[in-house]
Image 1: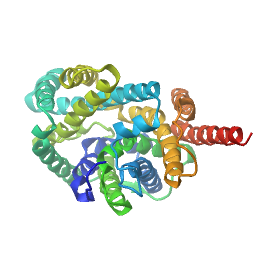
Image 2 (image 1 turned 180 degrees about the vertical axis):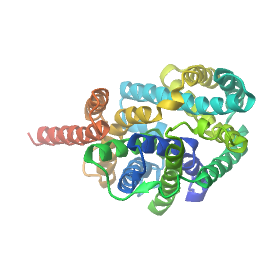
Image 3 (image 1 turned 90 degrees about the vertical axis):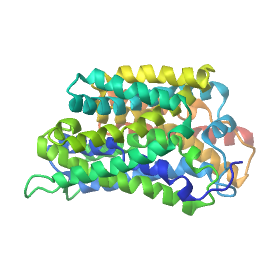
Image 4 (image 1 turned 120 degrees about the horizontal axis):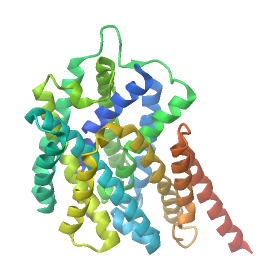
Length: 389
């Protein structure tokens, strides 16, 4: 069991997600999609959805009696069969390669703008040193992570001080149409999809539920603030392109380069761990494979496709949270012997969410989550029926 910790011992990781440049681009993308201010109701419901998606898996890492006090790898080993763990590891590795592609693409575009070189050159100049730092071990880049978080906070201030057009606020009253509301909430679900599943790594050993709520607030509230600031990008420039918006500000462009360093390092590290769980590669080769894949994606302009990417993430990973939380609740109550979480409880729901997303159904990932609840309830009901025969 992980030694006892308090919320301030792990707050940095949560704050880094909440203040990352991706949150700014998320807000800009929403405003661009709405062709104007974002409905405040979409932000509020998005915040609620993010909170739930962080609390449910995060509780698994808490010390008993509130949780199990173990990180994600140990929890998956206790809850999932080997084959299912391989599927989850593969999905996590692909997701982290995608996040690396976004952050390195954004930082590479900013660096290319500063140095007046092609974006691919900026990606290489930024990405290769970060890969070397990541390969040196996590203890080598903790200080850099603090610097990049500070840069991300400064970047939010820079964007906010640019302001929005005269007389036009960043938010609009109401919730918008039902289809746009579902689509907006799904984007917020996708934003925390990977971190939510990995939440036990950051809650393992926390004393109690108050610590979990504090960590969740440290992520969700800054995300909503950053997304609100990000709407000003689209309102001023009619585009969600953060680098283009900052082209007249060398300071802002430089802050983008610094701010993406920590998310890139996290993607190298976490993606490497996920790939190791699937392939058995050593740490450095696994990080290198993720690095090559992610940096290749970064050269394709992937940073301009954040909202579609988040929608896919929302469809693929969150359905697993449903049966994990359900089974954990049953195990805490000790009403029956533990059962493994089968793929039937979440994988068909994830496939449904992806299929509906491809078909262009508004809020398709939320339908996938609802399907995961139905599949999980149906599987548990089937087991209860068989046990009574």
